[in-house]
View (cartoon, rainbow, N blue to C red):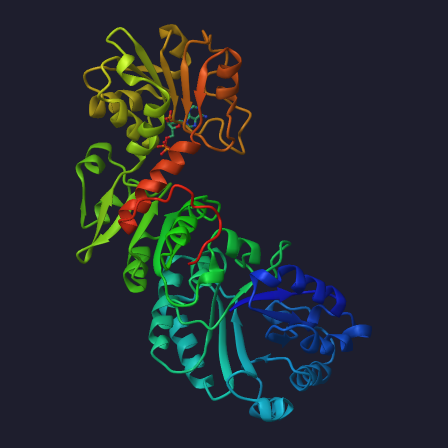
Length: 502
Ligand code: ATR
């Protein structure tokens, strides 16, 4: 169940919030600690006015809540919520058994599988590890009982914590009874999304505004980027590792593709600070393929079971898939770069006397260099540090490559094609360009692999001089489509759109 956390002061505002998100959620949690004292009683009419399961809770400051008033008053409010038709009431797991018995009585005869108590604990400490995850598991086993849903919300501070959390969750999956498992913080995002795969009864989501808990995504994003409305059973898992990675647009390419084809699959962002730990998590959760982005495209290679010649030649791997018990690496950046260029430019028209300029000599430049290595023309590699450009020439363009300093690129003009592969000009540094004052003739074809902003300063300047331009957006899309095909053995759909069954 996608559960909207509602932190409104009045019942009317809460009602409006829920109605506005009605198509995106399956349940709502009413946070009574946010309610205004004078009108808090109005909240008890909500179950008769909304046809959704409602959870009532009033969190204490130690659990990230606002309730500072009398403890008995809080407990009576929760009992009243149970009496008024709320489906679940969330109470701290460390309350004594007498409190649980009183709350159970408040539910009356309705107490059972569909109405009951969520017994929760929140751990915000920074080092969960295997020991903490083990304690979490024991606590949940201890709390499990008819009508009681144990809930653990624990902060995950790195890839090792995520691994420990997933190990405990997988062991708990074998134990009968509903549980709620929440990984807080950015490392918990993938398990908030793939909540059914880790055996959690529900996942929490926020409204558009600031999330009431770290790592919580909005109901809108759960639907638009992940299609969780159709996530009714365990899905095949895919994802992307990087650091940072939560901003990545790849989920918005892969997930609509799955939905369009009716595949029960989910593509998740995995922030990563430890590749070994991530690979163990991938094995544990049965992740069948993942994209690799900065800063792991080189570091992942020695950890793979096998990789192809392109990865070996470029020294960069952006795609890993599971095959025959191991992880195999390929590189779709090269073809992703070349495909849009081929569509827009007649590469066969290039001759020996023509010049191509490649700006940059980093990881991205290596994929570009490999892609253009078969062109018959002269290729100038302009980089801030010339030594790196010289290395790239030795490795990938020994015949036709020539390394030059970035600030002397204009000396070797004119170029037929200019390719920009550095991060200079990328948001948030979108005001800069690696070629200030370059004398464009207007005859060039300028390809900037940056896709945010869509038109970099370099492209704007080139276009103003009459040159044809191409941004990195089609490259991003093409390399992702090729990954999709590698992961699913299905061609990427021509019109993925935003809807369709899971
Ligand atoms: P990526 O994998 O994204 O290519 P990288 O391997 O770190 O990242 O390479 C970054 C590229 O951008 C390099 O060509 C780098 O130039 P140096 O090799 O001289 O460092 C280039 N780059 C980054 N910041 C730059 C800047 N401010 N001016 C010019 N070039 C820059």
